[in-house]
Picture (cartoon, rainbow, N blue to C red):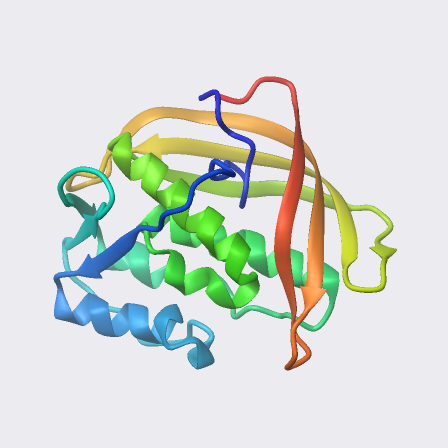
Length: 214
């Protein structure tokens, strides 16, 4: 994959100006996602659901027809730990966990509390990019080492060295693996800003891949 500049890890194309809207058809999953992140005050602590499959429709409103996405309730229920936005480092950790979850279930809204509005557009765009290529991405952070942060007047730069594993999955029932698992390493720098309510959030990410990324 040649356009993996990166956002959570395998990031959106930076020039994208559109977003993905994912509307869940299963009412139980709608309620679950609302608790998980669409009603952001809950920090993803809503109840789990059971069943064999949840069908979602991703409406690519700027190009092409809607796309059916199948995600099991068990996958939707496997939310990360509640975000911690009290320091730049904890904000980066929360951002990575929640964007990875958002990519897996093709729903960017669950991760918005960990990032700025501009970064939300980029995450949305990467989800759309994957859906246009008939796939989801399942990624996991294998290791992360934080460097010394650089504190500026309006933001803090947080350097990291990261290793990830990832696979591309089908949108169909069962989400069969299309490619992978792969591994990748990155030298990254996160621009983290403080919001009016005192939370730290990721505003942008600069990344340099170490080796080949597929």
